[in-house]
Length: 215
Length: 307
Image (cartoon, rainbow over all chains, first blue to last red; front, side, top):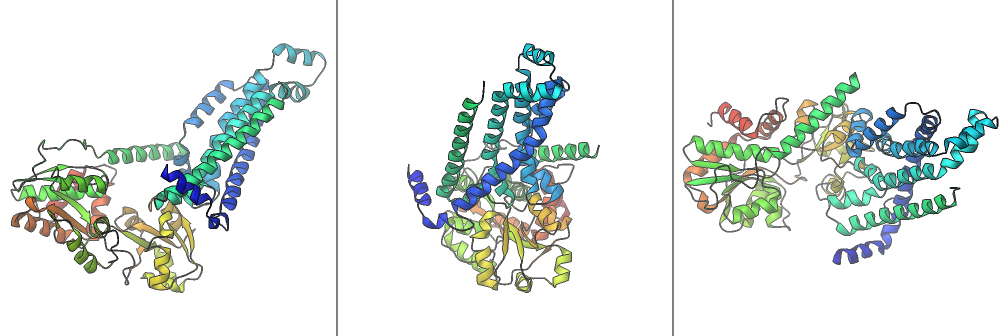
């Protein structure tokens, strides 16, 4: 248990709470990378997923594509983008967006598909346009699954955003990667624990949100 | 089409890397089936778990065999803790080592950095029953590299010249930030301050190289025997104040495995092992045809008239 005590010592060292390398700054960076990634991934994947779910077109392609994307190793993809674009924010965000797209896409089309076809037919029968059917019937009813996809994407991204530190950016991964480099185990454990707590907190928030969503 | 080809090439590279990492031999088995005695009649040459160490072990073993000394190999043993243990208990009799790292392993408080100081200190630090022979001139160590354009534009040949460059941007592994040969050393030895440091965690690999060649950083820490240095015409900056500790290749051998003849053979090999020779060996090992360490070693020994 020695290393846990030392990690506690790392948390209670006041210099670890200030400046560029301090916990608040690294935490904000980490949340920033996560938020940026999720916003980009939502913009790409959710409209596509809604369209697939609504029209039933390209479903086979979407299933195959999300399966293939899930199999891509994020660190390998990061290196590939670095070789193409150099270091900076683009490589980690690209790699993380690719990670976030499959659960969002799957959540979106599965959410729409889960709506009872009779309900959709009834909506059409009432004279709703296709847009109205999607916006007023399918999206609200498919919301729990849609949110489930978002929850899964956010969790994966927040846990994987540590890779940004691999190529010199900040975030909580800095503690893990710098710690490994100099065998500073309390720092590694401390950094990892913050990632775990952040992930659990976000998951808890989504659990609450999903419960509030109309089922 | 282009993407397909890039991806195909990448897959091939990854496969090749993982194959190279395996080293093609079972680390739990000695290729001769013997081992354990470490007697002067038969020498088991061990190696660490990376390409250069395996090539060097093959070179030692084949050079000894060529002179009629029975030698076998036991490659890819693992990290230093593992193969030092193996040489202490006699499972292996000989292993290629690097002076600076071996010195810090035996004496964690060692401060010597220049090749002569390191060798002298190492001679004293090696535990009884083991000894090091003459070190080779070649070194595999951290080295600071710039592109040839950047070197020309700023008139750089040595680390000391970096003091002229304002707002210096440097990429290296994360530990460079705190190690004596890193940011603190640059200030202490050369008075270089205010460096913008980018930690890239790939040991001077492709991401570090890309950051340097694309001009995102000015200086990159890359191991001195990495083929990418020559492939990209990088300029390795000299280190006149020995900020970076010497890492000459050196044979670490058990007393009971050594003899005058063994010493003579290994010393004649060591004189030929320059940093350029190490670079050449690593480049050959990384070639598209993916030769084995054994093949690379054998070609080099023939070329240098040692086998």
